[in-house]
Length: 113
Length: 188
Image (cartoon, rainbow over all chains, first blue to last red; front, side, top):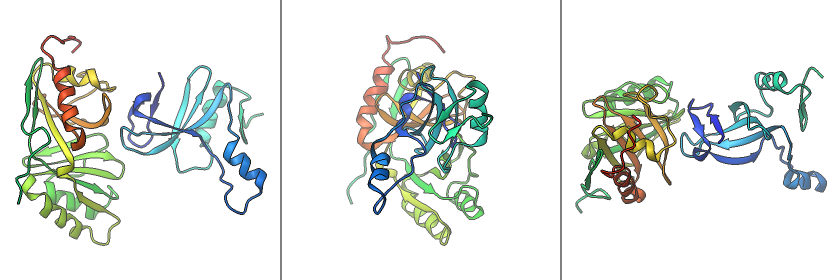
């Protein structure tokens, strides 16, 4: 069972209180963009074994969207953070680096490498 | 005018705890910047309480204010005054980025009293309801079985449950089943 702490209401919400929103930090390529970029934006998703970033919504709660960083193999949660950001905060990246040295996910990675 | 009634119209059930339809309750949803002074003043004028802290409810005689989300409060006022109070709030918050809506008739409101109250709710909700974790004045929006609900613990040890009116009958059935006389688990 996955338990994520909602960064907006401080509630340790269990999975059934949340709604999964897919991969985090997608950059949208809309009308007028290159076909390949649009294709990648629409279809190409990460499916990592390890560190992963996701969007979640506290659906049966405050209703806010937030981000979560977790490990897909161990279900370990590195942290949750607000939705109003284009990349994971440094604090979250540091936590992941401490536990998974050398990690990388899309354009984000262990800064010490 | 037609005579307003609740979805379950005064239904009551007694088992390990007593579940009852509380009746008509004025409820106002207030959205806005919870740290703003005009909003705090408007809440005080409408309910007599301050703006509650995260995850709590402030209850006074004839009114209450509950923390729903970082930008939303649920105000409880007497049913007859809900329309007037909503208008007052709207007036007081003119110019603010805020919205007050009377949702009294969109909600169902139940109370769970008795020794088994904590257990009844704990059976149907993924919330830590142990006496240490959930104390009087705590307010939580969560899930009860298949529907969204919000509940809090009163000073007298009874719970109040708020849900959408459309699932009011479901909620009463659910709470009654959880309060079945032979269903005591005895964890709390």
